[in-house]
Amino acid sequence: MLYIAFSRSRKQRKAYDKSKTEYKKTVKQHEHLKRRLDHEQEAALRHIELRNKTLEMYEQVRQQSKDDD
Image (tube, rainbow, N blue to C red; front, side):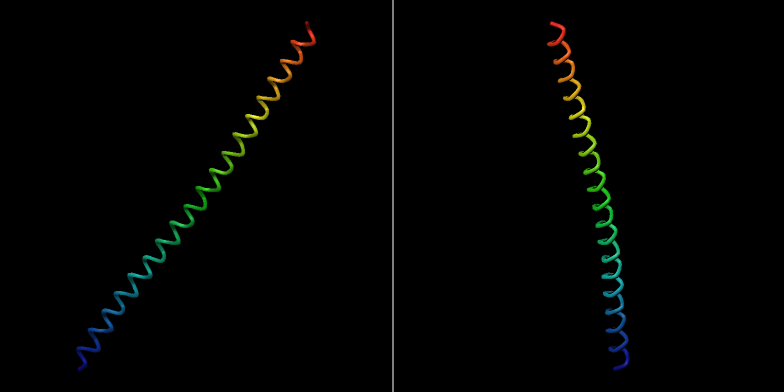
């Protein structure tokens, strides 16, 4: 009887330890995903800002060439 109780508790501990490590792994993956998404959003924002500046400069050049004519 004592062996059965010990065996069950050992199995439960293994299952608990396994779920604990999977939880930690999931949290780590979630944090990594959040950092990656934040980085991608910042990069996209930077790309849009640079594109808008470039288009603005093109427009200035067009206006200058138009004024020179």
